[in-house]
Amino acid sequence: FADEAVGLALAANVDVLTERSLIEVFSRTARFGLERRTSVAPLKMRLQVVDDLEPRIAEAVEADAPETITSAEEYDALGTQGKLRVLVEAEEFKRRKLRLPRPRVINAAGNDAPVDELLIPLLDEAVRRDLAVEAALKRGDVAG
Picture (cartoon, rainbow, N blue to C red):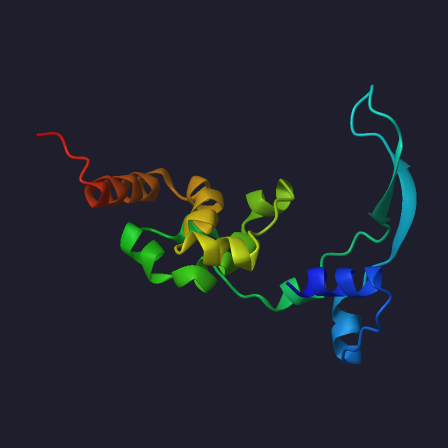
């Protein structure tokens, strides 16, 4: 929500007041550049990050890699924040340059489904299977 508030404030030409420490943590060097998404798309002016730094706030996150989760119970015990921490730590998540779901998307879902969609494919096959069985049982999807 904060990025949207800042965007609206800037668009409305309203002053944005914040602590200097927040600016230092989240500041990135950026510039405008021309970009073409496909070979036939027109060139568009887009804001591009110049530095190759990861946001510094991610350095403080301590979590295990997804492959260290050994059971569905262990996965369920993580909670939303724990799952997000594991997701940020996952090498595959970083390699694909995926983004975490926005807080309002998680809140609107009313459960961890947006996080689970990103994290479950990164888990061990046995854990994925156990989670699928649990989900089927919750839905009442059992062969009779």
